[in-house]
Length: 98
Image (cartoon, rainbow, N blue to C red; front, side, top):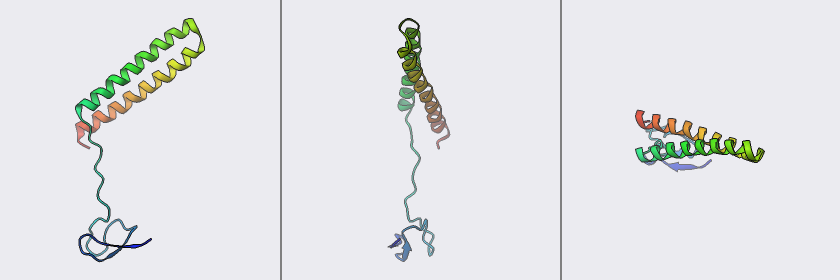
Protein backbone atom coordinates (compact mmCIF):
# COMPACT_ATOMS: atom_id res chain seq x y z
CA UNK A 1 0.00 0.00 0.00
CA UNK A 2 1.37 3.38 -0.98
CA UNK A 3 0.17 6.94 -1.02
CA UNK A 4 -0.77 8.68 -4.24
CA UNK A 5 -1.91 12.22 -4.90
CA UNK A 6 -5.59 12.88 -5.52
CA UNK A 7 -6.11 14.21 -9.05
CA UNK A 8 -8.64 16.79 -7.81
CA UNK A 9 -7.29 18.14 -4.50
CA UNK A 10 -3.65 16.87 -4.59
CA UNK A 11 -3.87 15.49 -1.04
CA UNK A 12 -2.32 12.10 -0.21
CA UNK A 13 -4.66 9.13 -0.65
CA UNK A 14 -4.09 5.42 -0.18
CA UNK A 15 -3.53 3.55 -3.45
CA UNK A 16 -6.22 1.09 -2.31
CA UNK A 17 -8.84 3.77 -1.65
CA UNK A 18 -11.88 3.85 -3.91
CA UNK A 19 -12.29 7.60 -3.54
CA UNK A 20 -10.46 10.50 -1.92
CA UNK A 21 -11.53 10.90 1.73
CA UNK A 22 -11.14 14.69 1.46
CA UNK A 23 -12.98 15.59 -1.74
CA UNK A 24 -14.71 12.35 -2.79
CA UNK A 25 -12.98 12.17 -6.19
CA UNK A 26 -12.72 8.53 -7.44
CA UNK A 27 -9.12 7.30 -7.46
CA UNK A 28 -9.73 4.93 -10.38
CA UNK A 29 -11.44 5.91 -13.61
CA UNK A 30 -14.88 4.39 -13.97
CA UNK A 31 -15.06 1.45 -16.32
CA UNK A 32 -17.61 1.77 -19.09
CA UNK A 33 -19.52 -1.40 -20.00
CA UNK A 34 -18.79 -2.93 -23.37
CA UNK A 35 -20.86 -1.42 -26.14
CA UNK A 36 -21.74 -3.71 -29.02
CA UNK A 37 -22.72 -2.60 -32.49
CA UNK A 38 -25.64 -4.06 -34.42
CA UNK A 39 -23.15 -5.64 -36.82
CA UNK A 40 -21.26 -7.41 -34.02
CA UNK A 41 -24.49 -8.72 -32.50
CA UNK A 42 -25.72 -9.93 -35.90
CA UNK A 43 -22.43 -11.67 -36.70
CA UNK A 44 -22.40 -13.40 -33.30
CA UNK A 45 -25.93 -14.70 -33.90
CA UNK A 46 -25.17 -16.03 -37.38
CA UNK A 47 -21.98 -17.75 -36.24
CA UNK A 48 -23.85 -19.36 -33.34
CA UNK A 49 -26.63 -20.61 -35.63
CA UNK A 50 -23.98 -21.96 -38.00
CA UNK A 51 -22.35 -23.88 -35.16
CA UNK A 52 -25.68 -25.41 -34.17
CA UNK A 53 -26.39 -26.47 -37.76
CA UNK A 54 -22.87 -27.92 -38.09
CA UNK A 55 -23.36 -29.78 -34.81
CA UNK A 56 -26.64 -31.25 -36.08
CA UNK A 57 -24.92 -32.33 -39.32
CA UNK A 58 -22.13 -34.01 -37.35
CA UNK A 59 -24.69 -35.78 -35.19
CA UNK A 60 -26.32 -37.05 -38.37
CA UNK A 61 -22.94 -38.32 -39.60
CA UNK A 62 -22.47 -40.16 -36.31
CA UNK A 63 -25.32 -42.50 -37.26
CA UNK A 64 -23.20 -43.86 -40.10
CA UNK A 65 -19.62 -43.38 -38.89
CA UNK A 66 -19.57 -43.84 -35.12
CA UNK A 67 -18.90 -42.15 -31.86
CA UNK A 68 -16.24 -39.65 -32.94
CA UNK A 69 -18.78 -37.62 -34.92
CA UNK A 70 -21.28 -37.89 -32.08
CA UNK A 71 -18.88 -36.34 -29.56
CA UNK A 72 -17.73 -33.70 -32.05
CA UNK A 73 -21.34 -32.87 -32.95
CA UNK A 74 -22.32 -32.51 -29.31
CA UNK A 75 -19.37 -30.21 -28.61
CA UNK A 76 -19.98 -28.02 -31.64
CA UNK A 77 -23.72 -27.89 -31.00
CA UNK A 78 -23.20 -27.01 -27.32
CA UNK A 79 -20.81 -24.21 -28.26
CA UNK A 80 -23.46 -22.90 -30.65
CA UNK A 81 -26.07 -22.89 -27.88
CA UNK A 82 -23.67 -21.03 -25.57
CA UNK A 83 -23.02 -18.60 -28.40
CA UNK A 84 -26.75 -17.96 -28.77
CA UNK A 85 -27.02 -17.29 -25.06
CA UNK A 86 -24.21 -14.74 -25.31
CA UNK A 87 -25.91 -13.27 -28.39
CA UNK A 88 -29.11 -12.80 -26.39
CA UNK A 89 -27.25 -11.02 -23.59
CA UNK A 90 -25.44 -8.83 -26.11
CA UNK A 91 -28.76 -7.88 -27.69
CA UNK A 92 -30.31 -7.16 -24.32
CA UNK A 93 -27.33 -5.01 -23.38
CA UNK A 94 -27.64 -3.14 -26.67
CA UNK A 95 -31.38 -2.55 -26.28
CA UNK A 96 -31.21 -1.39 -22.67
CA UNK A 97 -28.04 0.66 -23.18
CA UNK A 98 -26.29 -0.96 -20.23
